Image (cartoon, rainbow, N blue to C red):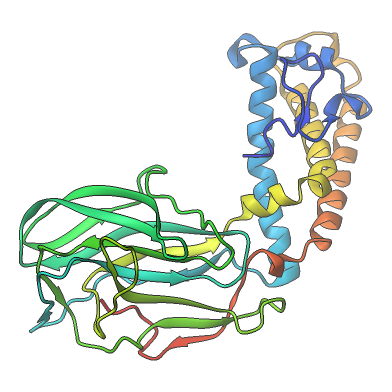
Length: 335
């Protein structure tokens, strides 16, 4: 995360801040202050600074998201797909095609989109080990990741939410990302028959990308070429997850504009540590009223700095919101 060590504390380790700014340059903040307020429980001077940074970054990201939402009617989650819904007398998809089956996520031209996968869900008539699962960038036919699973007869739910193994950060502003299962040798059920034209889509409010759209649709991809080979039917595989704005990427892209706000927040949090420190000495107890006044001044300046920086950022350059969204079906990806 780019906010850690973006602002430095002089004489604390050998890390040079990426912005060239130091919290010590704020009035009332010194390296000696940080040294004196650290205690054995915190592990010393360096550990205190690392802990303050972690807490500050967590608050900063939350405040940034809240600020963006207030000025741009912005929602972090853009789209969530549905769980598998199997009905009585479900159709069976043919076996033997050398394809992956799943869904394609088509993104509009935006720079800060992330895909958080929850699971792959499907019902199989075949038990097989091992079976490949993949995430592919269709624009250049390369993998984001691949893995193997054990397929059982009946409903399979493959957890994709653990750690960063299945994380997808789109490579291109207009990525077309396929996620699916190797179905060459397994027979799947689907809940209903539908045409290749069925998709979940929405127009976007990105004024710089006329004609852009977002879609989430069932698809087949050739195993050897990574080229779509949709057969006019569903995939039988529900790709469950969400598409959201990568707020961290927006922050990092505008770090120079946001760095002064971060510096004041770090100054505020160091003074907060001073007022709560168990390490009694002249630095922690000398003139507590002045310390409290300076802390409040830093908090107010932080609020001003982050507000002004957010107003200079056009969130539409990075993320999108669905407008008039729906689908040719009923708004759900129907595996």
